[in-house]
Image 1 (tube, rainbow, N blue to C red):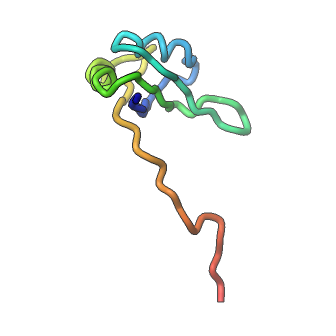
Image 2 (cartoon, rainbow, N blue to C red; image 1 turned 135 degrees about the horizontal axis):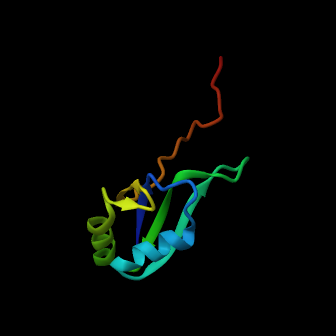
Length: 94
């Protein structure tokens, strides 16, 4: 099973293809996704890369964390699950 990595500091004009190509230096990239704003469609400057194995994910972290990618220093670490807010959007007013 693959390991998902968080990538922060991605240049706003980078593409998912360029991100995937860069991370392929560390192994097989299962997917690369740059997160975009729903309204404008512009990059939010971060994304996720899924590597095919834990070993390749660790190599990608060692290869890219704190390194320059297309003119910006990026942060790469293991993605954490999204924290779930059970009260999101609800008000408890009495």
